Amino acid sequence: MKPFPFKPKLFTTLQSYSTATLLSDVMAGVIVGIVALPLAIAFAIASGLSPEKGIITAIIAGFVISFLGGSRVQIGGPTGAFIVIVFGVVQQYGEQGLIVATLMAGVMLLLMGLLRLGTVIKFIPYPIIVGFTAGIALTIFTTQIADVFGLRFGGAKVPGDFIGKWQLYWQYAHTINGWNTVIALASIVLIAKSGQYIKKIPGSLIVIVMMTPLVLLLRWLGVEGIDTIGDRFAIHANVPAAQVPPLSWDVIRNLFPVAVTIAILGAIESLLSASVADGAIGDRHDSNTELLAQGAANIITPFFGGMPATGAIARTMTNINNGGKTPIAGIVHALVLLLIFLFLMPLAQYIPMATLAGVLVIVAYNMSEWRSFKVLLSAPRSDVVVLLVTFLLTVLFDLTVAIQTGLLIACVLFMKRVMETTEISVISDAMLEEENADGFFPKTLPELPIGVKIYEINGPYFFGIATKFEEVAAMLGDRPHVRIIRMRKVPFIDSTGIHNLASLCRRSREEGTDIVLSEVNAVVSAALEKSGLYLLLGQKNICPDIDAALLRAREIQAQWQPETAADTAA
Image 1 (spheres, rainbow, N blue to C red):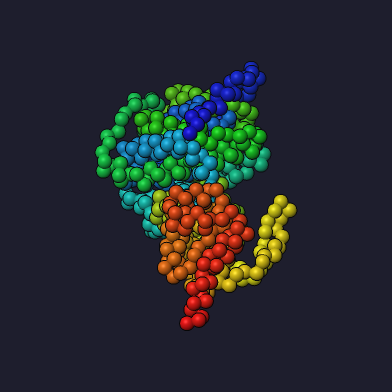
Image 2 (image 1 turned 30 degrees about the horizontal axis):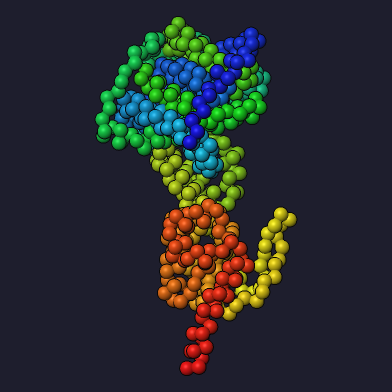
């Protein structure tokens, strides 16, 4: 195997770097850094963590992903996709459990990159991606209902499951705070509408700048019930020292499925974001290098108390729209966040929780992909099943179960489709279809000898259809002297197919029937020869084309003629 070509985009872009590019990158990085601040805070709080955890993640992961990544303009950090799974881990295993799960996911992402699985990740079925993304969106929306309406639960613990949350909301619906609701709904409307008039600055930043002083004024005038970040969290503006979490086999075993989910989700999100960025700037990212960078980011960040990180589509597009051209913009974005964290973090305590809830409601809406969801409902029934199962499992259970079950169902349905495309036909007349550079044409064969049947397999011969040949033969109920099996349209064969073919050859020999293989391609031929099947059949029964196979069939038939004549005389 060739050595892995690890080529971060940072080092290739610096070879032709200019002062104009630097100025453009710095401007974009400053804007993206400011934009990333409220999102990082919102994602951390929604995940059950303190605000600074999100900013620390955006700083460290954002720097590492830009420094080592395979995309020119990718911006990394915490994203809404992780809210659901991080919240569940924190509730069940605490922050130490989250650190371990994120570390494990980082190692898995590194392995994906080293094993060059970057292109394989892209083949995860689209209905699964839309299903769990829509499910995450609905779950994020559900978690924000309490802050949108200012509900008070009187010390009751908020359930972790979807149905339990809505039951609690209904039970305490009488505690709705009108002023809180107005702030939240106004924030949602402002974010939604601001994009129509201000293209460069995202609405999340605009609404926080507008609503924070307004809420401070309302509180000064005596309005109560509008919580701010400072009412719920103590703000710490210092970078924590690196800590190694306690590890044990039980913890690793319990968190392994969660880590797999984080790794798969991180890989999908980052490569999807990089692909979208490629379309916007006319470039091509290195998916395996990107996975290595994502892995490194998710290994380093947890040591400082951070949460899982991946490529962020919204921030990446903000970077592009503001002139970001190289990974320097992502590094500047991380440095801007660091400066804000060190010197301006205390101001974050005045941000209203209702406004952050509005930000996340818009994030959930943008994640929902409801238009794609609606279109997929008109897709083939198997795709609809995968979509709905993944969506419902994400909402009603958790993302780990949803992704695993969705992938399993998708694999089963894929095998079913492949089985349906593989055909085994019996040539009963003297006409065959042949193929050349100009396409298919009919070929007239000499009259088939008595007692000779030609079977043609069209499609892969794997475990899903390995018994199909036997079913066709049993249905015909014939026992010819010679079975010619044409395999020119068999692209591959697996171990189950080889086993069943070998069993057919042995059983046919016991029944007095010879098997002749015709037109086996090089890949399948190598697998059959290695398995010992050619020794079982004999080299004479392996023919390069149909004419040679028919000639061999006549030779076998000639050996039967004396016996047939003797039986007739008797």
